[in-house]
Amino acid sequence: MFRKRVMFPIVDTRGNIIGFGGRVLDDSTPKYLNTAQTPVFDKGRNLFSYNFAKRSDSKRLILCEGYMDVIAVNQAGFDNVVATLGTAITRDQARMISADVTEVVIAYDGDSAGQAATRKAVNHFASFGITTRILKLDGAKDPDEYIKKFGATRFRMLLDNSDDATVFLLERCELGLDISTELGRVELLNRSVKVLCEIESEMEREVYISRTAEKCRIPSDIIRNNVEAVLKKNVYKEQKKQWETIKTTTTIRRDPVNPDAEKFPREAKAEEFIICYLMRHPEQFDEIQKEAPPEIFVTAFNRRAYEAMLRQMQRSDKFTDSALHSEGFSSEEMGRITGMQVRTRELGVNREVFSDSAKFLAACPKNAPDDDGSNDFLVNLFKSKANI
Image 1 (spheres, rainbow, N blue to C red):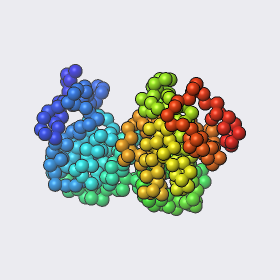
Image 2: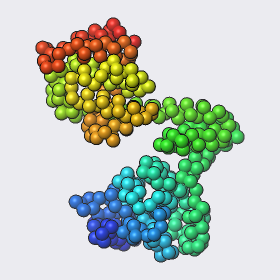
Image 3: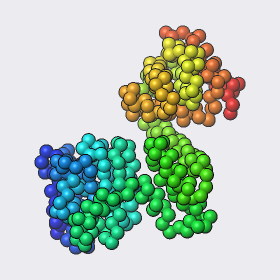
Image 4: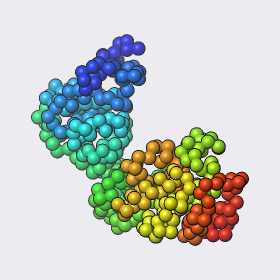
């Protein structure tokens, strides 16, 4: 498997060799080859040379693409350098790094593959609160070549003056464009919106929206509206994907998430309408809670989800689905909540439907299931009340 390759041992943070990486000695492919996944080795959960970098006094980590880059940077006097194991950075690796450092300098190659990997890395690090900077290797294709040409002192100066990651990505949006023309500015706007959508912090996103608006010479509201439209579209796509997954993996009769729904299908449906109305109108949570108190819910899961949403809305006026993770909901349960929104999106759950659903739950007995499980009541309710 590793014939005619230079071998690099991959060591975990406790000093155990858990796998190997092999680099070819000629131009054959693949350039790098790693040990296959085993119970102790997962290339998406480990980093080359992290056993050394973890012991560094620096709160900055240098992230390279290849093993040779790591060795060259380490020999130049930097012990805080690592490389991924043949893949782009993963969330697990970003989480591991966040426990030890506050800043990562990405020193990937300047080719298209390196830039694509850079964008993924920036997004993962941002989600764990790590400041990310980008190294511009002018005059060299990688850190190894740069150090050989210019020396360690120049490389350290380069590190200290590395660019903010988002600024770097936005500047790259200009490549190949003539922004003095209207067509060029339109394309720059389209590219920039994709970068801006990947910024999770609203405050940080606002700063870069203003910067991009100035660069494109258009009002910031136009960019902000474009970004929000793309974000909503992405959320809808993700919800639809999750719902499709639920439909293909859940049997018709068995409901492990909300087993009470099998006995009380009409009540469960009415509860979903109330939950979906609440999620679309969180600013009305006080009125909604009074008209539909949790006590009228029949199924345990829907009641638990409803109560958790009300609690989160009391704590913050900016409720999102992700807030429910802190309430202990599993991935499967989160998928069910997302599915409720997708299923009722086209039905147009309005205030009148919400009120009738609340009245129906308040009036129905809590100890006897429906005779035939028919949903005719709710179907007729939508025909007469919903705006569809």
